[in-house]
Image (cartoon, rainbow, N blue to C red):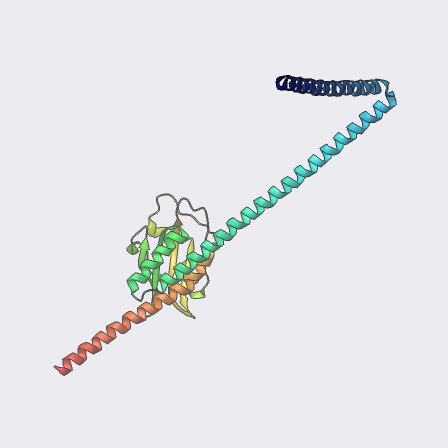
Length: 273
């Protein structure tokens, strides 16, 4: 009796399941038919659309496309403008970086000039500044001889100091520059094969302490990779005109005082023996 009830229960459940599946199938078929009907309605509506309506729709789409193209052009122009500003910012950044490097070089050069009181070391520092920062190939450093009122070549690069002649203050390109205290420049270039000491100076930098001439830095030629003088070069000319003169003047005073002190000390030693 119990088995029969179970069989009937299973049969009812099976019937119920088949009913659910049939209902699901009907729903799916109904959705498919509804979609087909909607598509058919759309096709019929499109087929029945008035030609004027089609023309209006076409013109609307053309206007919309033209508007999108204008927007695209505007965006491209804005992009180009932003790129141009970026290039300007990049260029300005490089200029600022170069200015910072120049300031650092000027500071280092000024510090080195006043870092020693040894005359030989001072001349060595000046030579390095003119070579590395200005890019001179052949040049000479002159020191003023107060007794003869002349400029004596004491150090040189690209040639021996003995290859350069003594210069009287107030005479010639260099002498007049030292007398006036003005940095003098010349565009003249030496002919091929001209000896270093016979080359015409392209720059004369007078070295003066207040109104007293101390010497001069005379540049005769530049390195091949250097085409001309920049704004930094002219700043270095001004720096050297003042700071190099002070450094040479201080080192000469120190050297003289050391010699006098040594002479006095020797004289005292003789007296106390």
